[in-house]
Length: 452
Ligand code: PHE
Image (cartoon, rainbow, N blue to C red; front, side, top):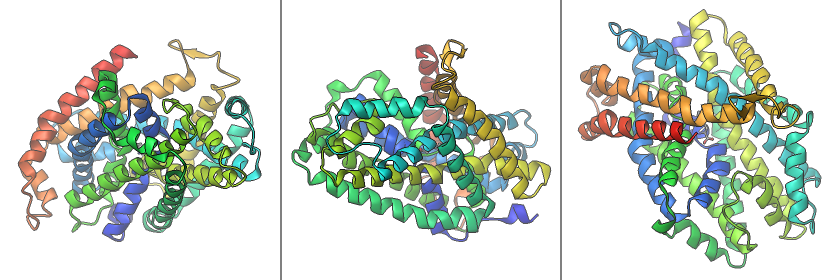
């Protein structure tokens, strides 16, 4: 009973915890490099459209399902449509997705922690070192058997310890402290980047929409990124939704989260691109943009560069931590509810399983890179599961459930807090949830599979 009654303590708490989930490696590592890959400003415009018209609709959908049922994903689906069998499978898929995503996330987060450590101790790059040596650092670090595992473990323990504090004292309090902290670091980096020579070229690249550079592939990537960045499509926001107090407006809450997440992704672009252009480096650095290119950029700033490198990797690690919290919370809350066991037990159980999968994924980057699953390394295989298959399928199931299975009056009742808020947007919301989002998700899914 006590477990079912738990909620965040205030609307600010909800927003900061959910922004913590949304703002992660997706914003600071992935967003800038795919924006660089697909041509800058034009990608940004398409991304903005998807984030607000599809991503935010999915977030509201998950919030409605979570708060209406006050359950974790699997039970949430079955309790909201009692006569309709099989929908719990969508919840199950979300939980499975969480297990794989958090495992991969732990590996990448471990890298950011390792880079933070190396930046602080001066082993990442010292002034005057060339970019070749820095790229070398990346391959050496990631293919090493032990070091990534150590950092992965430290990161996993930190995440689990925070979760043990519970919804208010753990998740909410940590987010209330870490999110403003993250924002301040990001602002410092933006100021540094914007005051470099030729910074305006980076801003031009980021904000000038040159549609000739935007490909169909770029458009699909923008939608995939919008969903990933808002943490939708795997039940995380169903669980956070179940913690939202009854009198909070779901629309306003989702709007704040979506706007903040997007603002921070754009700020990450402002911190990165002017610096990249200032050093005359190619912005389309791909996944290595952050790990390879940025250290060389900071390095060229002179001896103070290592301070900025340290700050940057601290920023990444903090962003990753609050996202990892939400990813680990989802399966843990599910087990707590399913088995009626105390939080400590479920968090420990999930953490152990996740760390085992994460260790395998980590080793597959180096030592075990010859082990192939359907022709891919384990890392690449899990990456495909996490981007092409699980989240779009789960997101599609979730939005179809809301649009076509749940009674309309239940949705309206939940969005209007039992008729106490006006919901002038309701028709538009339902149209997006019934038609636009499912069609877009289907396209992403089909093209993702074709191109895989
Ligand atoms: N939104 C997070 C990011 O941008 C990742 C994430 C996805 C977190 C799904 C939770 C659930 O990095």
